[in-house]
View 1 (cartoon, helix red, strand yellow):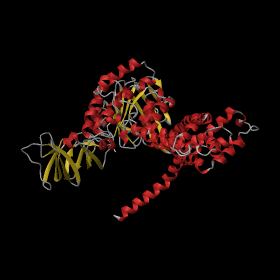
View 2 (cartoon, each protein chain N blue to C red):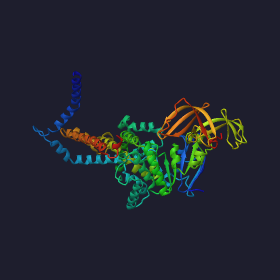
View 3 (cartoon, chains in turn brown, blue):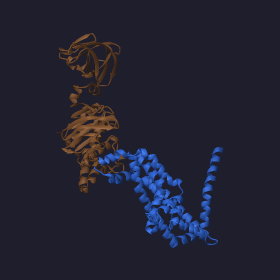
View 4 (tube, helix red, strand yellow):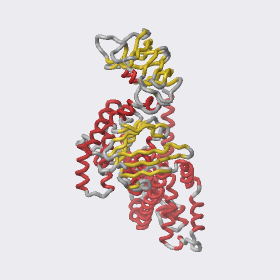
Length: 351
Length: 261
């Protein structure tokens, strides 16, 4: 039993099941992200927690209290929307104090809390401004302060950074994480941006077609994806086809090159798919990289500190990242190259 | 060059067509005293206790109509936008009906439905008749009110603002009063001023329900006096124009809506 428990949540719109048997237990103070492509059901789950959608079946409990049947305004939940949704007729202070006024707190207390929240988000001077006088990043911070002011039990963030430009997105996400940690508030964050999810979360739920494919820490999700979808959606992934020579000892063959994985491949026979992250592949031979493959450079992207190179290995494109070194210019497109990888970094995809 | 000249001529002709009768009426209204131009007719009209009484009555009716109209239209337009977008064309059609059904038909219908031998004998008492005309006027104002409010609602993200307010603990009444209404206030006001102008000059309902509002008074004046009706018409005109001016003024000076432009 966690602080926020979602058990067997289902949601159908007409005949389409958008959320299928969703189970999750979130600890108090935990930061959990729902990650997935659009239409995967992540926002629907969030909206069910908020009370804007009624689950077709299943239950939602917050701190042991059953809230499935409660209206949104009875749940004591803070929510931040992608489109900010600040009340245009109220000042920043009016917006932040809205929830407390609804709850009927005395004026002096509201004023003090508003001041506290505004300094928490780093905009103590802007209380008298109207939303239209603020930048997008400032508006979203005000929206965060407004959601937090009534001390909600759970904070829900519905793609709060998607409408902002890249630089502010990064700084605001760090700020959100800081504030969340400082207040220790249980938070669910919905995003389709894997970098966002990986950098900010304690745990990530990767969703796909209404199902939670995998739940785990960012480290687990990235390094040991359990399904092909998770592996491909989170981070860049190279896939290679291989032939199994001996499943018991892990002998396989990539193209013409025999490779010893040194681990058993239960249930695998014939062809399997291997996956590898760009950062585990090295250009040229390297110590500890037992697997060496021949290929031809097909693309070179100079990204500044990192150079992303695509190599054509027996018909498969393998992306790899190397750090920029001023004394070593990137290889020419079309030249032949060797790439090497350690056998233990080759992931075997389950399906 | 000639095209410009033609445009100017057309403009002048058009303006003359509108302004000349007004000027003639205004000029006539100043001629109550033989040989001199004076505001004598206005003095007489404004000092007439019947004028004060009927005009005051109409103003009160107009204000009550506006309140009733806002109470009916704002929640309806809001709910239609939020939950029933499919029925919007039908609601819009219904609100347009008062424009295509002559007031005389509506008021005859009222009298048939609510006469003293009906289940709800509203015409039987003074209070009942007032309530009846109030609802009648609210119906008359529907086309202007609904369109204005609906247009106002289009400029804000109704669904998300509602959800934001709900997640902060607000119920429907509070959402309507503190989130929706303030944000469509400019639209509500422009609808309200139109309503005011319509109710002030309305004749048919009042005459057939036998209420002494400003409309019947103007008609009575027109049949019995020479100069005063012109003065009255100019006054009524001034009120209408003042309403139009106020619409513009409010649109310009509303603080938080500037950003959307």
